[in-house]
Length: 183
Image (cartoon, rainbow, N blue to C red; front, side, top):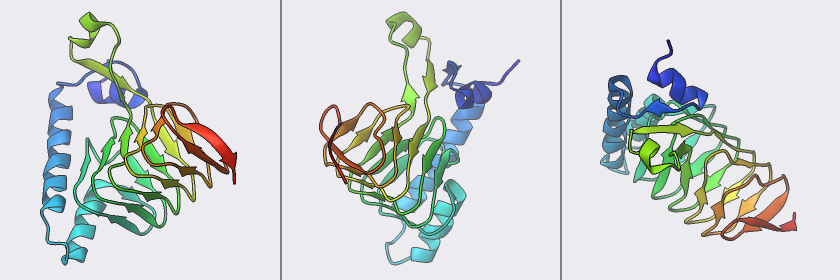
């Protein structure tokens, strides 16, 4: 029989109130609390906290406040930057490429909840992974919904709600986010 964590990572319905998952979320919350309350001048300390939280293939810079569910489901490439107010609900994998810039208040959500109210009230949810390619700039206040893939060399306009995949080499904006031109 699979654990709730195994179900969660597979994208299947799982019980959010599972003790193991609560413990892991609390661990991430404690690290993000420490990160968010560390003096900005203590850059080395902030980097050590991020290394405990996020899988990074290179340099990473995040401005506080930053929040996430687990941290270990977030993988970022070289030269990653997230500005103030970034939230990543990483119930499952969030893969971010090289040279990605997130403007303030970008929100990345992998978590999904059942549409049926009775099922939703059981405390079960599921997740869909998100992939963001290389050389991507995501404008302020953008929301990236579960299961979305954003291609390489993409600019997402501020305030967009990305509900569907975005191809390579485009500028996309709006709610819902749509391609407005090629680069």
